[in-house]
Length: 441
Image (cartoon, rainbow, N blue to C red; front, side, top):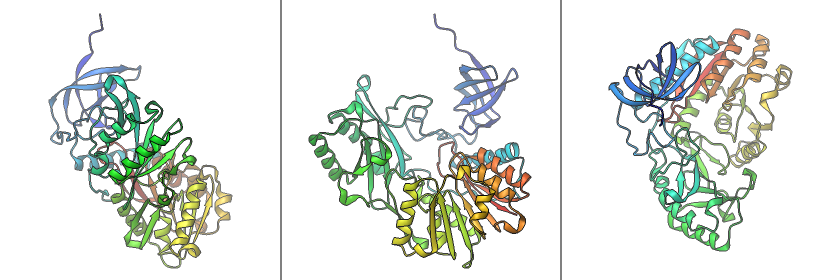
């Protein structure tokens, strides 16, 4: 006989960074999927650990005033979203609190000012996505979509509200397409990249495609107005099905007269609406002057570097990916900014103060690291003498924990001041927290 489920009533106190409700039961922390702060729920325990339990809402006894009906029929099964049951404005407030809590508890720092959160469209915003593909005969054939929550299985979804509508409409046609190819069980994923004038689908295939497969892909591309790329092995093998469409992907930054070109495997921000607003805020907070020399560290393909180069005397971009460095140089030259910019490939996780001094003095600095943060760089900046320091640093973060850690290093070891910080809702309906922070010596 299966064991009886463990059910108990809980008062939900707050949300964690995964969008789970936090409660306590018999002195133990319980993380409750589907619960919101202020609610009283009956929860079913799904996992027990010595120091915490995991649970899922079975019944909401007292709902939050901020609870809303998720519009997506797949919410709760698909792992792409975690917060559709919470009003969008409350999602932003939750992320702002999570950011402030991380700074206080991890970095032991408090900002002098809280910036208004950056917000944009809450649906159809996701212009970058990795769709999993699986042949599942028990579910009728090929599935295309995101993975199920807390599972390696692909969710059986027919639509996705956070993808652009025309991409969401491709989910079911893609199932039929992949099912008709020669090795549907050897095509694990499709990378989606939506530019302002083209939509690219990059198909990962573990077996060579037949001529009939190629013809089917071409017909599908023409019918649905998408550009196919193929990836037989690692990301470096990705190539366009039609070489003439190699430069189809680009996004405009009209405020700076720029057009950024990229490839489907390149890192770009998933949310183009927030990206434009984020660039504007970062440059405004930096306060760049025409005579300034500016560093853009973890610069990627130049998303901040090239806008900065329209305002500063010189911009030095440094990035760990040789591919993105090459892309940044190409675009700088293409847009007449080659003489104002220098791009270098370097592992910024292994730098020190001697290296930083060797770059020469910077008037302003922008840091935009991956989730691992920029600890080595923060240590180097903390070790600079006052006269060597940039007048201002803007730090764009995609992980509150590593931002808080690095802020603690800058402030407590280096004596910098955290002037301002604010949340950036780059990923509505998810628990992902982006932010922007300003430091001054």
